[in-house]
View 1: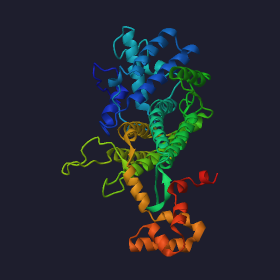
View 2: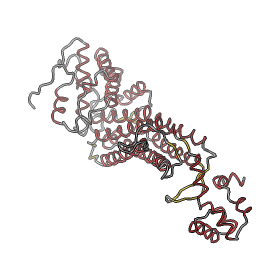
View 3: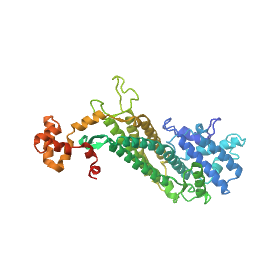
View 4: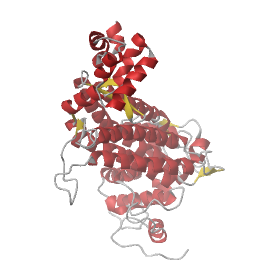
Length: 459
């Protein structure tokens, strides 16, 4: 392929440099994240530990590789990983980037010059027992699993707990329900917020249910799934070391061929992230609709006043946290579409859309984590009911007439509601004027709090 010059002060080698030059696509937005670099370091450390324990790598070489890999894991060598997502679909170039950086750094530690390939060679030693085809899927699973466990779940759980506390505090706040964007029978604010909490709980369960498949690693498959050039116990042993280093229950996959040619575990995780995004979008949209106005809209919720809402309208406050979180959801929907399509592109023994699958899943994880944390801190914690507005809307609602159905029937109840609406009178006045019930009966039958909790009343 001819000679290629590599910057003398860099740890990467020729293969990394070729990729950096020939795939300048999406720069700088798609430079690999810290999470991917950490996972590459964990992979190479676990592989060296396994190879040493299996007698495939000398102790001296293994220790040098482990020391260099620890620096990659810690983030001190991040500047040595310049490659972008849009490269080879197998992730070979990023795998070789890690091999070259770790080998060169290991040789530095041994007192040898960069590029010496001694005592540690990037292919023969750092990549021993691996192929990019099975190594990069390991990076995908490790980075995604760590992101879900350590970043996403804590952030969403914190938001969920804030909302749950709000639901409990608002259990007795009776408000008008709405269906089809029209007035409906009463609910409590606690029930409304509790519905958001239940959606988030269910979505989080789906996300966590995706983890066991992510814990299955392709190590030991090498190029096509047969395990050629790897010790027969390499996959299981390396997975054990990865589990120790991460504290997560990683294990060798039960089928290496499926692990290389498809990425169903990543697609399933992405689908669960999409469902979580849907739940968060529902909640965020409800918040901005309930807080709309505040005088010419619904205005039943008060949101925190974080920043000016307009460059021209003084005093305007907008539901910006809701807007940001719904945009996050839209991006996650798009990411999932990309992952779903990319996962269909496994041909024969390899899917060559690995980097774009990983990038989209990680972006979804980080966006949902950051979006949830921001919404929790700057909106959910400051949500408060506007009691006066809630009471006024409840008192003016015609759908309280529904409580009369069991007593005077649907037709007479409908006539009362229509009369009140057309004449501009209160529901109570229209009901009494109808002659179908007395004032005392109206007051006894129309009790919004009982309507919001009918089964509690009956029991």
